[in-house]
Image (cartoon, rainbow, N blue to C red; front, side, top):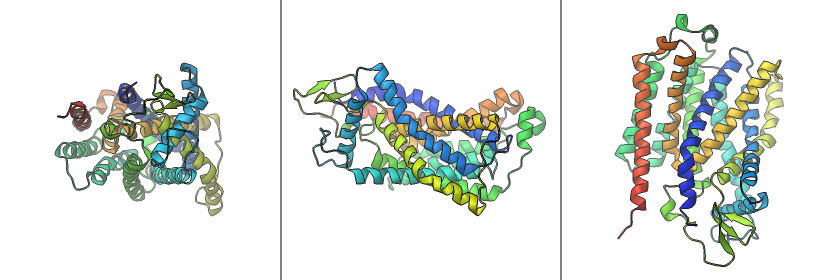
Length: 400
């Protein structure tokens, strides 16, 4: 099997994962807003802790799926992950064997850095959405697309990408502040109830969101540079996985190469980012619980268990949608890079606008600002996708 096979599988599934990621983000945002306004359960850190600890289930579920749908064992799949991690973290040693093992200190340092990197912007988002309006939080949060571009351009401006990112940022402002939502009199009773809850500290919420947005962009850039395997479409021409040695101990498989009969290498599509996602979940579960009693004792967030089944199942919904979003986000970040993923996430604003039309005020919610802004965001994302496909096409052409 050629080294391009994982890339072809990735291209086949990437847009399906992207669609699921968008829907999961919208669901998580709406459920979080519903929990803290309609149900009155405001425990931002506790909810964040539950959501990010739930990420630990990602790898086990992926392994369960692979063992149920392929002939490979969980041990062989995990051994393939060990080879990939060793090759990535210690490229100078013999990484085509599981005997050397993963450099533990480097791996633990990577997971700790990823946990910190994804924790502080995520936690600030959970806090901000209880302090400011969801429209302000959405608009400011999604400026991470522009921050991601600034952090990755390295003073080498690409006009097409710069135009697309700027266009997307403008589209966000048009949707959010261009009158895309209906008036209170046009809304359904549930939306009227939600709109009656005024933001408690909008300025503080907006500031927290801005800090979170920059941190999220920085996390995306650093993840792509240091954590993702160099086997995505942008790097396929210079990847270290281009060719494995010809030997009887290597055999082609559906996903990659079976090394010494007990390791599937390269790992199946998405398995490596799901390993990192699960590791972040375990790190969160083991380390961040200490802040729950601390916040309770200090009176910052008095601990309160879910008072009824409605709150409980809403939290479960937030956790599951958060798992889908974060797992899909990590996979796409390695495939597409921070710029395309961050601009792609702006499509969540378009979905929120559509949901307001379908389930809220109906056609009264349709305004010129909402339609134009949504169209601008879609066009910007389409331009970036075209740019990515164009680069892949040129990279695949033979060079003389």
